[in-house]
Figure 1: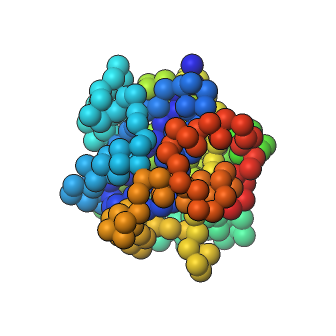
Figure 2 (figure 1 turned 135 degrees about the vertical axis):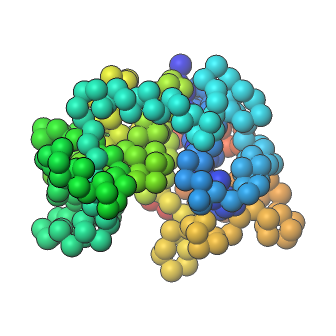
Length: 310
């Protein structure tokens, strides 16, 4: 059975781009008569906004999107909130440490940027980590630890080419060591990195279909590598296009992109919003009013590739 999920972060109100991704993730799972899981990704506590979780749940319910497992529903793989899963992450971090796949890194972001010199190191996720701390001796580590608390990096194998076929974007290949280098799995402030936590959660929650925004496509090879190193099954991936503003910039909670509140205040109904989101990915003509379940009947007749463009 297909098990899909939507995993928002409570750092602000869900904007239309977030909601379209939620809708598409729901459609992908329901199309296959699958289960849909909601998970709250609140590990980055300094960025979490009070009451944002409840606001997100309310918005999703108001639109007519339901979930089989998650907050307010429960399920066999609870808890479904990342901040309540820290002990679980420690178990799988220890597994990687026992395999000598983790080492402490004392480099600051500025030092890594300064060390990066090759043109390909200016990737969208930042410069490739050059491996500065990978071969430090015990004495060198002890000296550096007096000055800075380390992050923990995954020792990415030299042979780390990952190939997968995205359901929307098509065939993808990335050599993780060449493109990214050894990447952080726990930050220096002890917060587990997104790349690590999301893999553990998806695996333990039996998620086998990941539908999310195209901005996360570059993370997928790293996550597949972690699935492999931890001995987990690898889900299928579908990265859907983002909604852009009038300037061509993607919507962002950080920039205060519009959520549902002003639209509801202006008299928009859930059917209006679902219709607009369906129009934005070419599933319905402009002005159509419908519920998620009505859209599901339409979505079931389409191929995923229609969403490659706005």
